[in-house]
Length: 224
Image (cartoon, rainbow, N blue to C red; front, side, top):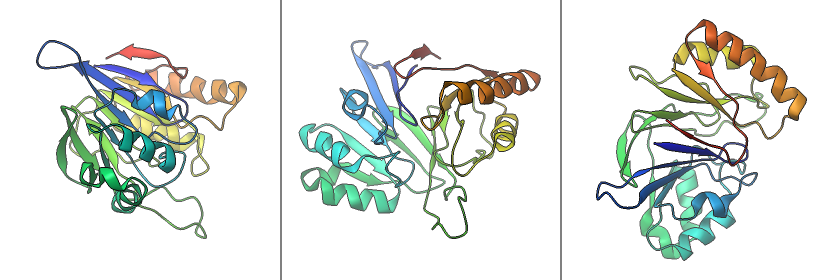
């Protein structure tokens, strides 16, 4: 499987098609900080963890859905409804993702975990959030530190910085999941200095517990 990071929380996953020619492509969280059209170019499906705009750019994603007759989407109920309203011609290709479920998307097997966004502040409304484990390989938690119960996670995408987290919680998440390797997501609010400080901790603590944490720049690709 090949993983490409885009700006902030968006990633693109690719693997060879079963036919032996071409690739299957799945995108997660094409938000408004991300290169939405590029991330969705040639994709057969995309997943959305929750309704915040930095994880789903509704107008741009809806436009791609309507222009791409083979593209499907899975999202929590409120996002699925909003996408159907924004892209009515694609309504039958927009699916509701429920927690603790499994489905196939673009030839990838997807398991869902978690149910809500991490707490920002008691005065900020909580929204639904679903983490996705794709092909038993890559876990994208969205805006949460959900640890998938009973699941081995080889590759963890780590929300490295957010209004709802602190560095200690990021490190505890890496330790708790126990993945072999980890890469950053949700880092658009950090400058290079801040990124370096947090990732230095992630690399050191990850090494202590058997997780190899590596930095990725937007547009950078790794083979898993």
